[in-house]
Image (cartoon, rainbow, N blue to C red; front, side, top):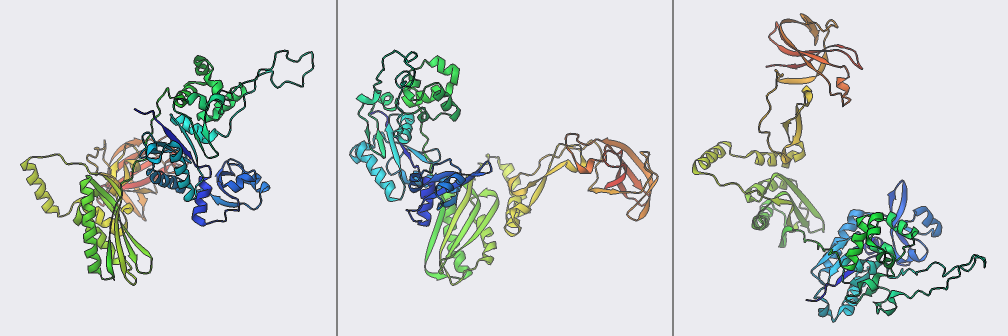
Length: 548
């Protein structure tokens, strides 16, 4: 079995070159991509022209503008850069089926058993570099037996650190204190290594990992910044310096992460590659020989593509919760119709009815050339458990009475007023009357099964507390004035004391502890009143609800 061979691909100017590809900017002008960090604008990416003028990534925009005033500045779009890198990763799968994203500007490719198809590793890498160059991307490649070594070669092979030994460069001391030890000419470990390289790619021979990376800086081990600085202060500037140290001392001083990175680079610890999984895309389209504009024609085309979409979803045991219909008009414009479902479904009639509701708002213009239907949000459908014949009969009878399920009703209402405007209540654990329930979106929640029975009576109608005119005392009332008239109490029950949640500052509960009373008036009304004992606000009587 051949040794594992890994390629690490680095795009040093990816953020700026993405802008160049999109805007067709002048290649001779410096371009930088900036982001806001710690209340200052920091450069995250730049082009080769800007780098040649002394600008570097991580530099503040103010300093860069002082060096080069004519900078072309663009704000970073992290999401767009991530999608762009994913597209490059999928496109690169033509070289190897095992390609993964590494960080924000790199790829990892397993080329084991692939290089002979291109005539060897050297020719394969040149072919990859040429392919990236043709699409406007500058790339640097490192090839080795491990992911860590390939990553280090792709980014740091041009930054070989010279190894100075103590006493070799001391010439300025006085003769009396000058070191008498002879100068030790340090011969690099890499002198006897044939490393295939040029300015864009570096290939380490198989089985020569240690010799290939020994002269690289410790930053090539993918360490934390603080660890790099500490190693530099201790004089451990090269990877070879770290490898030659006792493992116990390194583990005690820097923890297990340093040894983990060393082992991954040398191949002692396997580092798996997780390739980018292809995204499931459920989209279908139909092209018409002549433009259409009548509603029956549009519905006929919709039926064809919707049937194909539902069949594709059923094959994967998936359902969709959001569907988009795109109408490509003859004037090169696109009109979109989006429909949300309360519950994932792959039922043809269900989805069709929701789309037809919104077809009334579709502007066909001078005609439609293409219809495209896409499932934007899919999820696995839960398989129902098999039940007996008696339960099936009862379920069918209940469905016949209802004619439509609650989920279908929510979907139809949501198609007209929006799913976010349809809510349902769920019980909540709280003694505060206003917090005994919580409001959830009906489309993304199940109906509440069991509502907890309250310990005492609760009103059918609950409103914001309203002030009533009564003596400012906690004693039971005989009469009070509320809403412009006098109410006479014939019977009262209570009090029920409810305290505010002390860990929250609720403005409505700043009046302190409440004593609630259930009172019956001579008019037959049964009200829920309470006396607030006072806190940050004054005390008094209030009415908050009405019983049936």
